[in-house]
Length: 141
Image (cartoon, rainbow, N blue to C red; front, side, top):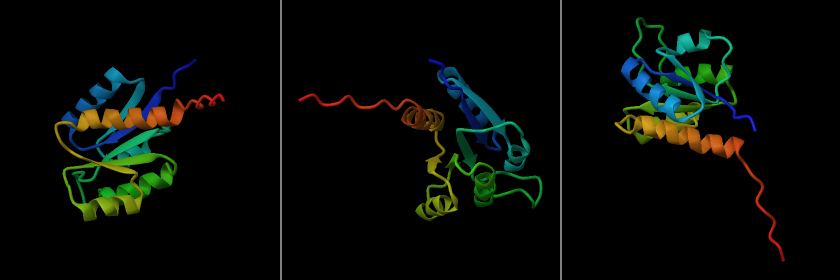
C-alpha cells in the first residue's frame, strides 16, 4: 500500500522555531513541510494542498499591512476551507483561544519547549484518524 505524503505548512516569524519543528516532523513522519515567515508569502505560494496549517498568531511584520492572527485565519480559510489551522502562540488566554476558534482555527497550542513534539503528536493523531481507519471486526455470536 502506498504511503501518503502529508503536506504541512508552518507559518512563524521565528526561523529557529520553524527549523526545529521542520526537523522534528521530517525526521519522524512522511511529510513535505513548507515553511513561511508570513501569511502573505504562504497565500502567494502555488501548488500546495496542505493537510495541516500551523500558524503563529504574533507575526512580526515589516509594515502596517502585515496580517495578524485573526486576519490570517480568515484568509487561509478562504484559500484552504477544508484544512485544519492550528494556532501556535505564547498567549494562554481563554478569551483569545475562544476567538481563534470563532475565526476558524481547529486547535491551539501554547508555545513551549514541547511545541515541536506536540505538533508531531497532532499530525500523527489526525493523520491516523483520517487515513488509517479500519473497519471494526464484526462480533461473532
